[in-house]
Image 1 (tube, one colour):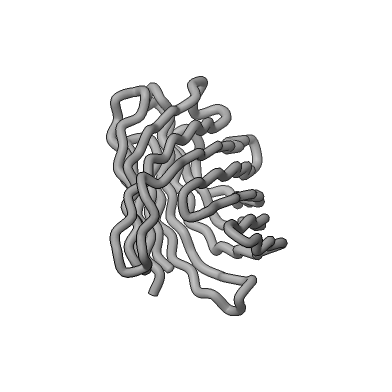
Image 2 (cartoon, helix red, strand yellow; image 1 turned 90 degrees about the vertical axis):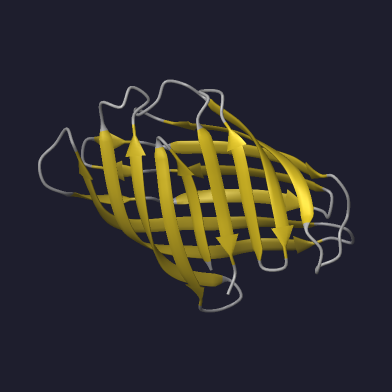
Length: 184
């Protein structure tokens, strides 16, 4: 799978490979920037994702995921590189018409705490077959400690078709945001 999340203050590219139906390993590169553009961080990490629990309901599915990584971070306000660990959890629920997810992730290195939290809610405009494009409206609120003192709110249009989805929106700071995912 390949994924990306791109805005002026956050750019992330991730690729991972599913070892089993519950485990995936991969690598990611993240560039973070403070709201005032004064501080930057660049993180390159090895990642691990684990499906901790799945509930297959009659018309829905719910999941609990462990997300984690370890890598090196550099910044424009300190010399050299530091080891950063990024454990987190995501809980999600979806039907063919409704979606909700809560994510919390720690971004920690010596003297750095950029913990991240997000909430996503969305709905599909209509049900579609697997071979049809399905449009969704997604609203996300997210916040990152120490790089921002604001909560970013982004309404997005999501299009899902077969093995990919793309999202495009504009956040409450008038910044364009684009996301994608492709499953090989």
